[in-house]
Length: 132
Image (tube, rainbow, N blue to C red; front, side, top):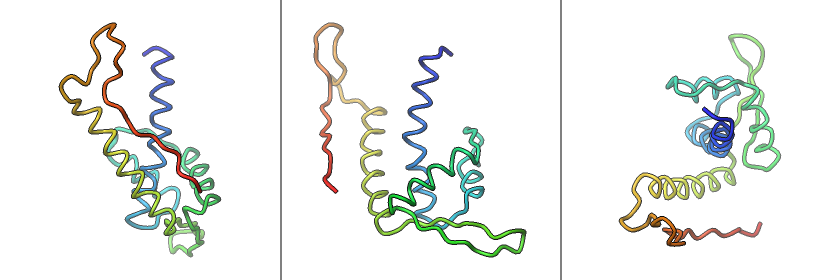
């Protein structure tokens, strides 16, 4: 695989990983290592804890997650993360948009792919920036 393609794959994974983390936290609280295990359970993804913790810290700063230390019978206390209401709202909006984009990739409508050299761009996406 060439370097340019590897970079594109890395960027795609980074963009989707946050949504995947939110999806697991939408269901139940997790600590960092349990998220890594959940995300890699299918065996198709290789992921290290060092990748997850910066995402969790940033999302906590942004108010999408709340962190809480919980005593563990299996060792030291663990820091559990759960989605705040803001995080839940954000996840619901993002997962809806994600599904639309996946369907665009999986099921392009007839005529949505441009002919070589015709200058058309296919389906048009509405992209808007929401004010905070």
